[in-house]
Length: 316
Ligand code: SF4
Image 1 (cartoon, rainbow, N blue to C red):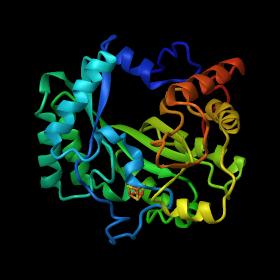
Image 2 (cartoon, helix red, strand yellow):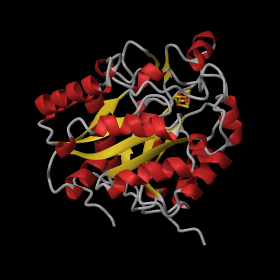
Image 3 (tube, protein in one colour):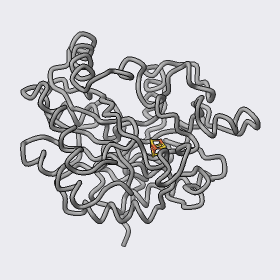
Image 4 (cartoon, rainbow, N blue to C red):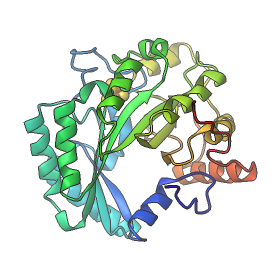
């Protein structure tokens, strides 16, 4: 199903939510379940992916909350007051939110979903492809059976193993392919997350991500991010010692204007760019707030007549 683009030239998440929930204002409530990550605790590596400082994922306000209940209640309060939100998706975002035994995951998800059940319409879980198995997929699917929309978000980051090694990802592209196989016929909504702008990847290499995403019909959502460098990350140290080229806002928008037409037209873009807390960001400094960046990109895509899927060619 293609979604009404609204005023945008791509399948955007806002329009999707509006259509799906018939105009009711639905917001994601970020929860830190206190999980760790195999790339931090030593089972896959130490120090994390080279660009990662896990604190940079989430706004200051949703960090260091002592309990899940408190995080959700405060998150809902903010969303209601600030955005007139009416319904909510509980979003386990920081770290690897399937990296625990299934009984523990169930306890965490159940607790989060018990807090405001009549107003919660979905569960969203961010993880790595190597931290998913059939049992965990079955657990997540049990929430679909309870009537929730469940979004399983996996970090793909790059389609190139060379890059995945260079960024200390501790996970190969083949592992993403295996995870895709696991959810091939699943009712879960599958989202993949990518990072554009590793300095050794050329534009042509990055444009090929589109073909790789397109070939998995189970991918419903994507989150596209530019590479940014934050304090507390390995790349942060490298960048300070030896700065390297990063996308300017104009360059990234130019890249998106070529990438989006290649993307399958039914895929919904949850995010076009990433942002970090200002106090953690080292580079690039785009000089605009989130809404300013969004508006710049949207206007530029519209001005250029960019249309998602206009250059999409199904693989034969
Ligand atoms: S990006 Fe994700 S997988 Fe990588 S270190 Fe950070 S939390 Fe772990």
